[in-house]
Length: 172
Image 1 (cartoon, helix red, strand yellow):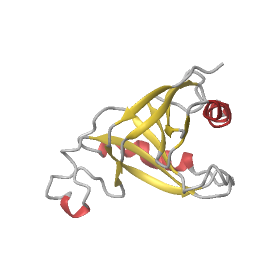
Image 2 (cartoon, one colour):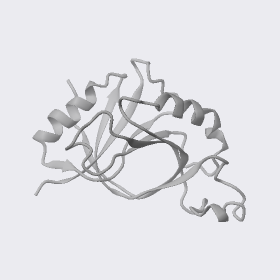
Image 3 (cartoon, one colour):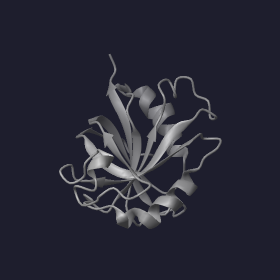
Image 4 (cartoon, helix red, strand yellow):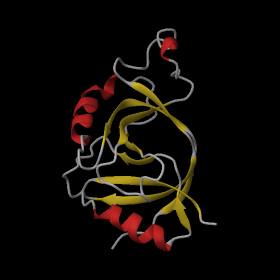
């Protein structure tokens, strides 16, 4: 039913966006994206037109799974490294780049399993964590999980396409 992922080494990247703390039981994803999307055009030096939905889970989140446990979710756009300083005090010296109310997120590089997905069925995550990961030569790594979404992406569209990036490392 699901295609196997490609395994890709991703370089570090710099992003600008907004974040909220939430849990699966108190999901505020819609609110976060309603705040971010109308303002994404304010981000200067974008690398592309995609947007990124990124989750920062605390250590042990998946081994001690609790849907009420909090994590941080970001709505982001990638920017070029040489154009935007990570230091807020430097943004005026560089002519802008970090809109008011937004933050810089520095993503470290690493190995990812990348799943191409069409539609909005959340069962893909059951497949990834409950089937593919268990049977693979990989285990979860403690880095951000994220989805790359085309700017035209609509969550409820059955033809919506996204890439789901799961941080992995080789099992020992």
